[in-house]
Image (cartoon, rainbow, N blue to C red; front, top):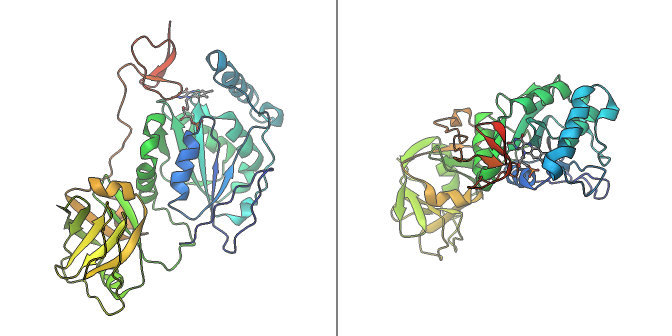
Length: 356
Ligand SMILES: Cc1cc2nc3c(=O)[nH]c(=O)nc-3n(C[C@H](O)[C@H](O)[C@H](O)COP(=O)(O)O)c2cc1C
């Protein structure tokens, strides 16, 4: 799949690629979490990316116990229909009508949508009538219903995906896997998927997406899907499984070195190999494709795995909500787990507590 990432900011405007993506990801990030989440998302779908930046630079929203952040949100709350209540952002150059899907990635501030993202949606939300709207929110630990309410106020006629994705700051390192599960749960399709054969392998917790090559062996495997099989360990760099029927392979099949992330058929035994460590070329080891996301998850695959074509609605199965961890002393507003002796505001069980 050809991926097009465009950053539309005043300072940086990259020309449109020949294929216009149908999905826009718009994000704001103060401390970098939403930016990382956006990177994980844009690696998995075809999308243009728009970053929102406050017009006033160098502001410290967290200073004096988050006084400035609070002040900005209070101004919006007091007068939500007045443009002057919203903090200025850098001008953006985006044509909302070009997109069918809009995914908003925003931090939570005081249980509300971060103020700069509210400004963008105040300016453009009315153009999003009938668009598919996805919402991804990052917070330290507060629940995201207030952000969902802000989004619905500002984009009142969007067609919302069934579920928003909440990623705590402590979960940003696994954003790729959380995003991948969410895309499956909402049955996201980005409308301009190429003809490439894409498959998803998952044990319900760990998910990997592969793009297959055009060989007869890859097509043979693709035609068998969906499959549920047992994954096995092999050596110290492979997970393998045996398809129930033989994967046929013709003269077009390719032998070659297999870097981590390669999917291959070991034809003498008939098993499929998912490499998480590199392997050298081996006779009868035919390359089927490569991982396009989640390659870091291969090593953890265990038990029964489901293999299916991407876009298959039946892909929603045994999903685990990953929002259950709670540090015993709560979280700081930066998303760090609070430690003994932590002073200032701490969020515990969704409530802000001032620890003196
Ligand atoms: C002004 C401000 C207010 C915040 N309020 C909360 C809050 O009420 N609850 C919470 O769990 N996290 C709160 N946070 C933490 C952020 O939601 C969290 O760190 C998020 O991951 C930041 O995303 P970013 O790195 O993309 O800016 C706040 C952060 C800031 C800057």
